[in-house]
Length: 143
Ligand SMILES: [Zn+2]
Image 1 (cartoon, rainbow, N blue to C red):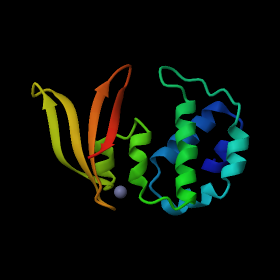
Image 2: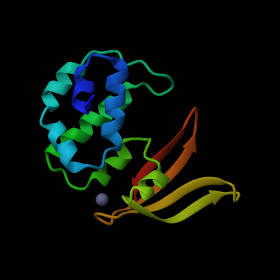
Image 3: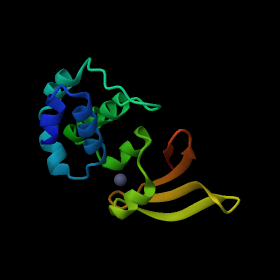
Image 4: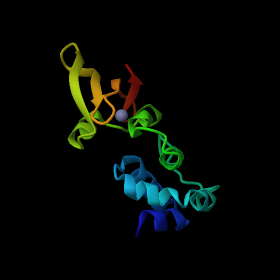
């Protein structure tokens, strides 16, 4: 099933899955083609209860729609979206060659406090705090 088909499926699980795919997607061409159908996607997903645990699944949908809006407006570098979503793991972002990590600060030499990350595209610098709650999440702030 394509991402668009998932959004249109009416199935909470598929919509959640499509949302996470869009959130993590780096393929601008693909994002661009999906964003052509933004209004249709918004209509098809509005009012569907997506469920979820400590973090509601609608959080992922909300972010996915926001990202598609930014892509469609050609709203600059996608790294500007890092602060809008708490599941951007700096380690994965570095593996995807989206950022380089220049510093890893630890607490008591054990737990990660924050990372310093630089966007490989626009060279913006971010301070990224890693935190544990019911799940691990990251708070990106422009440095
Ligand atoms: Zn950037």
